[in-house]
Image (cartoon, rainbow, N blue to C red; front, top):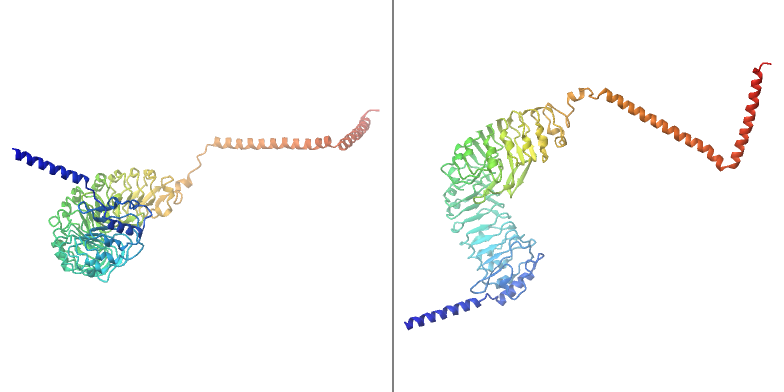
Length: 602
């Protein structure tokens, strides 16, 4: 009993001692490492003052600096996107326990990547993305044998051979050297059994995609887009069971694609020379989220099996030689918000269910984007490259594609009427149905599409009058109704008259500003009331008489006071005038008397 009590007391003492020690313990900055960080900071230009906290004695409390809780050693100075400039000083070598270095999103003015970084063998993560580094990648980067992540993307880096750089990095899991100036062929990477992501897009790589690519059993993302690869798409890619994103777009691949290649979820093979038919997909990739085969040489019909893709968000097949009708069962895909089949030879009518998808979509429908390549997780957001016709010109986007709100069915062989349901898409920014064989009239309530900025219905067989509601779309900045069979007077509004005549050209029945005047307007008699004309004439005469009277009054005043005023001012003129007046009066008196005496009887 006593021994148990004594044991309990001793245990309590131990616990209290541990609590006391742990409560008093603090992560203390090591002086040597503090001086190394200050030397590193002194080589930088920090216009934003992000590193202003790098002054106190405790470097572990500085912004971006993280220390180990057990050893107090600095394990990372995270300085990404801080607006830093200047140089990267070798004092970082003094941080022997540094395992994470992130300098991405800064501007180092085109200097080379420092050679000493290849000596920091303890590094596990190195990110120099988008920091304006130029020159050759230091070959001794291959000495970083503990490296798990290497991101040197979005710089202006070159290398005699990528294999020299990555040799020795066998533990590497993520390699991103995209958007640089690397060239040559892809090195043999069979030793990199741990690789999960390989990003080499936007470089000058050429040659064939190596057959060994199928050996990366852990590979989840493979992006080789925007290069000059040619030849065979290795069937071994189909063996990568964990691959969820494959982007081979913007290359010169020329072979017929095998359906087993398309066995992944974020697939982009656009802008190549691929031929053959679009493969059936209901069994091969039931979980496909995004399929982009745009700008190739595929032919045949769009397979009905695409309607079985319950998880698909984007289907893009723009710019091929596809023909036939648009598969109606695509309306069964509950998550589909992007359909890209423009620039083919499709026939039939525009599906009315398109508007239903658009109205239920949170990001809005964008059928016929050219090259979106990846879809972010399970959200309705799309990132990548896309080009499309906007206001009659081809435009391109790289990011924020989720904000696009447009429909482009242009350059097919579609027939029938414009679906009336399109007017329900009030948030749509652009509607392009040009260069088809659409007939019927423009939907009467098109004015409901109040956010429309661009409308192109040119080169069809539309007839009838232009709806007056079109004049209610005050946001309309581009309009093309040319080369149809429209007739009647163009509705009068500030908006519709602001476009030039080419907007309405090729419609022989159209007239009115900005086209020539309508015949009924030029032959129409005057509708002015005759009484109004008489009243107008009387008014004119009245005003003329008023002007005459006013002139006479002013003339009398000026004449009278011109004479009388001079007599008032000049006495000599006044005396002379009255003397002349007396003489004249006497003369008239005498003459009058003589004249009277002649007629008086004697």
